[in-house]
Image (cartoon, rainbow, N blue to C red; front, side):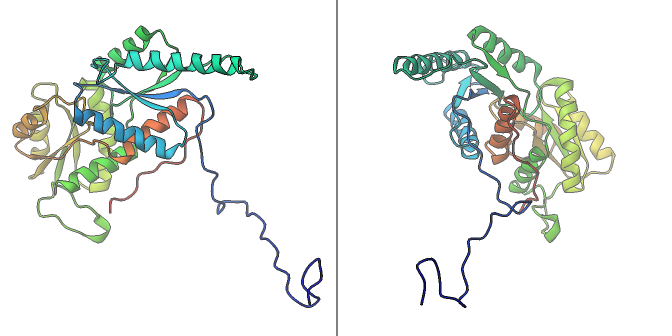
Length: 307
């Protein structure tokens, strides 16, 4: 028979297990701090329904990784109606912050006037493009809003993973070397196509080395916006022994002029993969840039094998 305080003598007592510290403990989920600045994704290129869908998917991924995140989209070439400009999005974020403070003060709350940046602007660019980055910086200045501007998303191992996936989707690379899954059309040389001149080519080359390690084939970066760069790189790869080339855009998509990729593929006489688009790594890297700008330690991000 049990006593009021527990089981009768001789019976086992079920005790709650103590919370286990150490590496097997599940990490506490992160959430956006209250009143944190907005993450504003700066989207280059001509706005379109496809561009908006891509940008919305990127911010959706970021929100899923950090609940409570205030994530917005501003277009470099927006019209302030269907596609709000970066300046107007920043101005609206600033007005909303002031309004929240005034409402809290009128309600008698012990409100502290907010300081620090209103927003953190993350350019939707895989690699550096001097011309586009100058426009983003000018738009932030023209908004007259206190906002931090981060660097571009790459280079990063997650972008090498994304490139591998896009190549495998196009049948131009093995999806999983560990399983020896062969693709008859797999390329034995990759042209990593960037936009932004020499600086962009150099930055793409870093991610290209990571991609080469994944595919075990040579990868060389070239500039889509420099005449002769793609053709010269294709010739260099063929002279080195590659017979079947593939073009991999080191680009997210909105910054790519229509038809430029097709022209480059014809110039190199090879097939091309799709741009990176809204691959999950893009949203995760945008969030990582935001968190780093605010001094929040992002979770460990590593490239994983493509399966």
